[in-house]
Length: 543
Image (cartoon, rainbow, N blue to C red):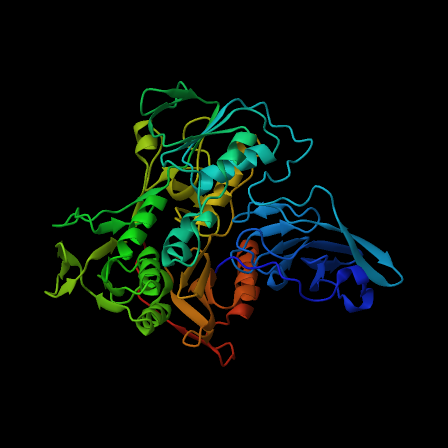
């Protein structure tokens, strides 16, 4: 899903719309002076805000109204209709707002409210009258999704103290999901990749230490020690060190044409090699591996995917969706070698466990990631397949929080601790951690969300289902028009969708509210009398 254009469609809202034609809860998209505007009526209130999401320009007129908020159909950002505030990532910037007048039975959108038009890269509106809680210096280790949003949220909440954002990469925080999608495919320019400019951090008093690596943490004295000898004291600390690729130990695994994809430099290196390569082998049918395969096919390379499972993504999405993903890639020329692994890599070939030898002048490994927990573990923090945190994202050490790929938190829906490696989850945890550093005591209970994209076909997923009893399907997976519910007993754990954005948003809200009746309506259970619904059972072990 690429960024769209803010085109003028619908009625000219300055000329007025009859109140009788604007039903309660209706979303109406029109325009004001060439700008696309969304008008929403809720009882006696009428709101007018920008009609395009500030993340990837998703069409908010196709979104979901929840109370006095609007959710984006593409990547589930959430905005206040009253203020335009970006309430939940992945959007970082607010929507502009317009003033509305009622005259002669009509609604007129007359002028933009001053101070509500935040351009990309500007600081979102700061909340007034917020007591920052007397917190001293805040240090954030990790300048990825969670770390960046944490720094921004601290300023938005009115915190005026010192913020130090420590990033190991020599760059500003950037849009990591795009590295394996449009950017790698060559359909998105690099100007889209940075989340903010260097000026943004400087102007908002955020000390961005790019290219700096934290090597140790002293929880007792509350200091972070950096490579090179410097140390930084803190009153509050966020650990957001993320994850690193699992590296294969096999002959030839360190050859120069073998690449992993985690960082912007990794993506740049693959792009550079793809310019001269003709035949690529992708090891691993993970989301990253398959997105890389799609991107390389878009660039015209011959692509082979090697993976030990019998179906790509079956462990996460189930058999039918796994078969669909395989067929989609095969339609675009990808060749799969399943139930196999690589045993050796040579300068121009990859040898498989079944004996086949695949020609390859580019190899990309995407077999998963592991959380970077060494800093926390060496500091004596509780670690168990991630950094253990409570519902407020606090670790076992006073004043220290964790968020993102490393955080293992108590999930109220499943009754177990989970760790989720998704961009939007990391951003939302950074937001909650920032507020809790200031004493808000806000529980992290957001429903996990992620999206994947293959040849322009989006797959969205809400919830968390490490295991299930069955999968119910409404619609047609083959026709790319479906919603799938992953269920255990009487409970729906997660929902996936292809081109059913509105229903995926409704499922997100239903999961938040524990509304099984709505989830059954969206994706009926077997025997519920709906001709387009069916279910099947897969054998699944806990992961």
